[in-house]
Image (cartoon, rainbow, N blue to C red; front, side):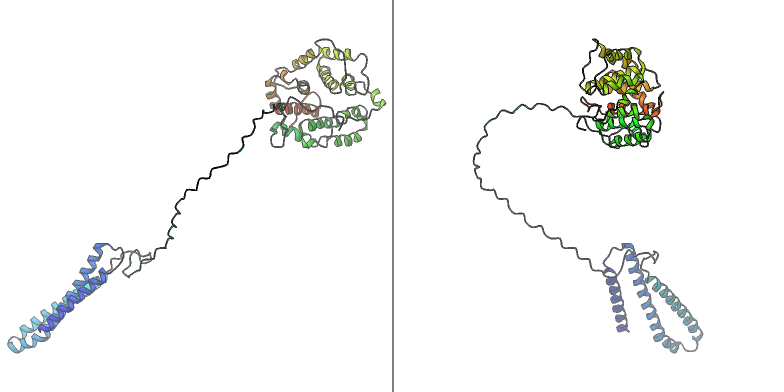
Length: 407
């Protein structure tokens, strides 16, 4: 019996140690109170299980001896005690089973579909990547000082005086036009007016607008399509072609007061000016209106052709001021105002134009890029575009209005 008890105790101790070692051999991060619960439940389960075995051993060994000792007199009492003992054993067995169920509790009350955070299985730590050891930096060695050979000193030379070059106007490009200028350029994309083509050629030579590069070719095509305009209009072709031929029959058909002012100036380097031409210009300035503006245009062409003309003292200044006086403060911009402003810019007298007139011109432009006026819209739009180009691209020296001899 003693050997049996000793064996039981040894088994119990070994079981406790085994379970404890298994539990505490876990490598991971498990909460301390859960480990303690598991240990206690497993120990309690072992204790009650061996207690049940002890009771069963006692029942099997000592109950027969009790029956022999007390005999039949105590048979009924022994049966009752046996039932009591059996009841106790049943309770111990039931409690042991309950503890055995709790002993399997691992403290994991999460959803088993979730990824487990802890594990009782032994895991090997992942090896850390071996970082390459940095190579030792070489010790800096001071270079041996080499004495540089003295370079020969350059002989001092006096800088030559450079004359400042005159500032050249920035040629306009497709990216630096204002919206008003772009819309006005697009207005003439489908234009069929011959005289408009001649002024578009002026803008191409003066400002480099590539959309108008073929303006003279378009003029020749349109002139062929409108033979009734070929007489006087053919004379104005010299604006774009220095070598434009002169036909006597075309000169005989010059009857308009405005053409009488401008045509002689256009060909003054090839034909003598009329003897009364100075008086014609004076009368034009006195008359005002479009005759005044055409006198200014005629004076520009006389200068570009290099012709000489005797005029009264102060005539030129009075003519400039009279044209500037045509530009009033009326919010409605007229064709005459635009003509005076454009021709003053061609003559290099843009400082006589008030800055507020620029805003009025831009504000009065139509959505299609044109301007309304007393004359045809192409005429007013030519003048408006010519004026705005001079405003956007100011310069001290523009190319001439008339095509040069080399063209």
